Length: 215
Image 1 (spheres, helix red, strand yellow):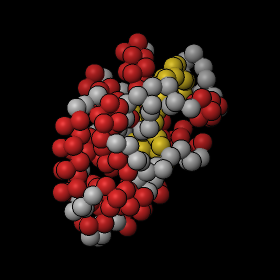
Image 2 (spheres, rainbow, N blue to C red):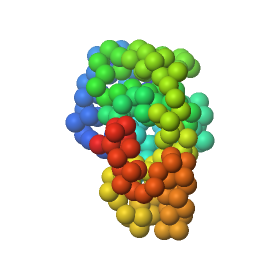
Image 3 (cartoon, one colour):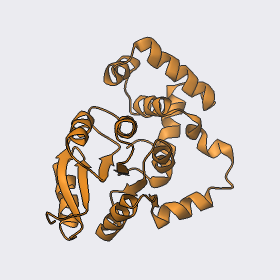
């Protein structure tokens, strides 16, 4: 990392070990610098307002806000900043949703260090980035039946609600976590079951586990 680095980066992840690992990788480059790091979505939004950033590495799973929601708010306030979403989740399950929400790229946390640097440099130039593995996965899925991806018909908020239900949380717990009313979450649940042609939470949970949408 140098004072003359061309690409200023903000790292957003609630695990210190992950942040340290990424900083170690970036420290091997002369053109990229980590200028700030955050543990929560709200902290990320605040730091984005305080620093001149070219790239944000943003985890999808944050303790206070869903990474997709943080992405949307950051892009609404600073459209020029390039956001690279990264997660432990399978790329084919979350990448398209993240890209549609405004992300410049998506990377799995298990990616090699060189891949992280390549992704940062690519999106900093205004390009999109997807890994070769994801590109192959998307190509393989082009001819699949729509029933194989019913969760992709959900809105971002519905998708978030579905994953929380599948994780075993009650409607009241989800309402509190998302700062919404119980009635609103119940309406989301009804729409989710209708769109996905499911009957109850048990079938929803089975679907989410089968498709690796929850840990």
